[in-house]
Length: 103
Image (tube, rainbow, N blue to C red; front, side, top):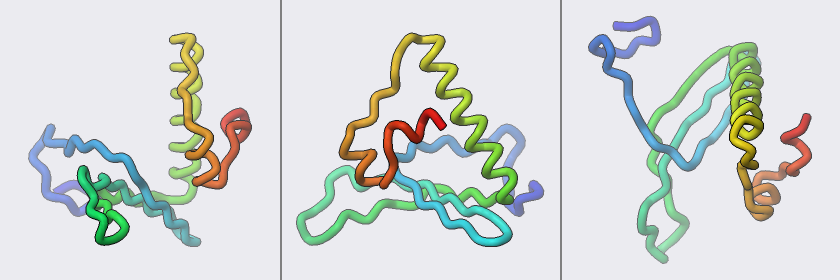
């Protein structure tokens, strides 16, 4: 058993693909639930994503993870000469602006 309370065989790391996430922040930490959309949603209502994994960490750790992920993605863009394009509707749907990337 690892320190996170999960029974795992050595070198057995879950490998998942996700296309959605929910973030909850409290005074003691951050919870990020990663989910996968239904492949063929029905017209009977809003599609319900399937939760795949939940990651919990301290506020400090979450801030460092965000900083390092941003740094790595910006380095990728620089090294590859490619801008990772995000559609305008995604920015507006998330309540962020393209300029937020340059902060």
